[in-house]
Each structure stands twice: as structure tokens, then as C-alpha cells.
Length: 266
Ligand code: BTN
Image 1: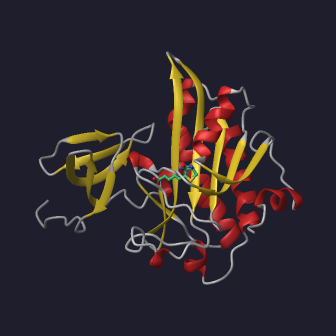
Image 2 (image 1 turned 90 degrees about the vertical axis):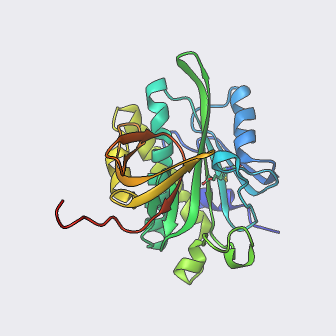
């Protein structure tokens, strides 16, 4: 029987102002996103945390499934942000995950735009933000985070080529409750800062390995290749195409191309 990792996290002490003031732990769920949405509809408080040991219908970005197995970390946090704060929740989640991985495992996690968390170039965690907006008002927003902690990605066909886990990268056992505690502290700190008007943009940019690289960005049936020059103030990618045009991309999958070579006479 898997341990109740929330009980362990709380036993070790959780000092947050908003995040996790109410915590719901489930051995199994359809998706922590769906449970957080049900909680929101029932009027749950800001920062309500949903944790599941496994999920039967977990989802990732762009309609993909997210492989969920016991021993990893699957959480969703419910927020009621102001409309202008909404675009920052995804980078907030990513920065919090990177900080938590560094603090609890000592591993130098990095990011691939928009928010794949990487260790040595392989994906170890992902962030999914879903929201319900009514006119200019955000009814609620949910930040979902999945972190591969013990997953043996080599043995999962759909993950083996590009994913890893914290334990595989660290080559040692990782304390999930320690990781969860750090994660909640970091989300809480960043969310309080965001409420005061301080966005995670600058820190997020320094973690983005994508910038300065020649990449192909695919979204639905379109793809564009160019230099990932910068991101704008809400995190959209600014891609310099080969014809010199600068385009703004709001979503997509990034693939690294050959390094950008500066011509001698440029
Ligand atoms: C991605 O595609 O990179 C985002 C993956 C997000 C997965 C997490 S696991 C917890 C929460 N529940 C879900 O169904 N999805 C998110």
C-alpha cells in the first residue's frame, strides 16, 4: 500500500500562507485537474491542494495523456487570480518545480519552452494550467504539476526516448514528501509575490534553455523554424524566421535544430 505522502509532508511541517491550507489526498483519481475543478465549483478556498497517488485519466499539454504511476508526484493547486495574473501561473509553476528539485535533490533542472522541466535534456516534470474565465473575470485557475520521481521511464514505451525521473537522474532515493514540501513552499512564495505585482518572468527566462537556440516549433498542423530570440512579457516565444520576420508563438512543441551558425560576413 503506498504511503499517504500528504500526511508525511504535514508531519514534517508545512509553512505556507495560501497554498495547501486545505489539502485533499486521494489514492486514486481520474485527474487532479478534474477534482480541483469540482472543488472550485463547490467554492473551495484559494490555494486548495489536490494530491493523487495515481490518476486514470491524467492529461498533459495539447491534449496528450500524462503517464501516472504510484511513487511519483501528481498535484493540482486551485487559485482565484486576477485576470492579469493568469498568464503568469504557468511560469510560476515551472520556476517553483525547478527550485524544489534543486533544493530537495540538488539537481540542476532547466526548462524547455514553454514549460517542460528537463534534467540533462530529458523531461522530468510538466506543468498544465487550466482556467475558466467569465468575461474579464477569472472564475478559477488550476495549476497541475506532474513530476517523475521513481518512474522507470526506460520501461515505458511512450517515455523511453525523451523522459527521465529524479531517482534515475540522481542515482539515489528521493524523498517525495520533502520534494512536495519544497514545492508547496515555492509555489506559495511565488504566488504571494505575484499578488504584489512581482512576476516570475526574469527567473523563468534565465532557466529557459530554448533561448538563443535554432528550433522548430510545431503547433497543430503548422511548424516554424528559426532562432528562439526572446519571450515577451507574458511568456510567448519570439521566433526570428530565416527571412528576418519576427513571429510570436503562444503555444507549441519545441525541437532543437542544428546550432545557429553566424555567417562570417554577418
Ligand atoms: C505537460 O504536458 O507537460 C503537462 C503535464 C501535467 C501533468 C499533471 S499530473 C497532475 C495534473 N493532473 C493531470 O491530469 N495533469 C496534471
